[in-house]
Length: 242
Image 1 (cartoon, rainbow, N blue to C red):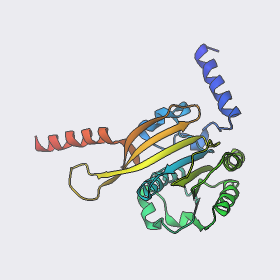
Image 2 (image 1 turned 180 degrees about the horizontal axis):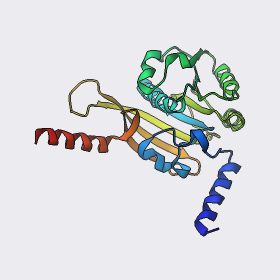
Image 3 (image 1 turned 135 degrees about the horizontal axis):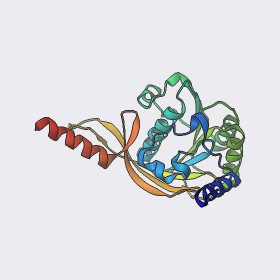
Image 4 (image 1 turned 90 degrees about the horizontal axis):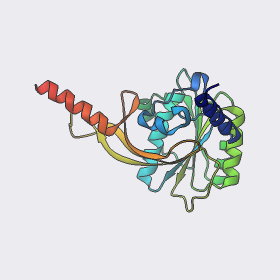
């Protein structure tokens, strides 16, 4: 065994000890996160784990929901289903289709108390075969996050905790922490109006990986770096004019 293989093996052992499932088989490479993949161990989005997403404002919460929906769309290929738990009916189900999600494949649960949301999320994460579970709440301490992480380690389900205007950011057992904010939509031809959705994506923490920030656009069913998409579209327009 060479030195490179030995180092790779040690990294995999560390991930196992940290409770992070190695992404192999059908789940590997499903989520096309563009340049963000460079931040993850093995350059593959970690499934079978719990991801934490921070939303400081209502507009950021909407942006986070769209970003998570685009990831779920990849995980729900081939007829997968997911559970979305929230205190209010904010998600517009038909709008999920733009991210490759059929609304009848999502079970929406609305609960007012955060302790009930935590309980329902933990229960849903234990159901093997689900593509993902989303829970919307403000507070999340280490004990609750640890229970959620233990649930996904047994089932292999991917969890997302969307935290709306959290009062404090305690350390958690989640494999990652994101902060998503919205940007003006993008149109390849520079036409004003509603175009492709864009996000400012900040990966603040990722276990075994490298945090960073990116400007992304959801276009043609995958994430692309906004600056690169703009360059490509500008070149296309130049060719048309030429």
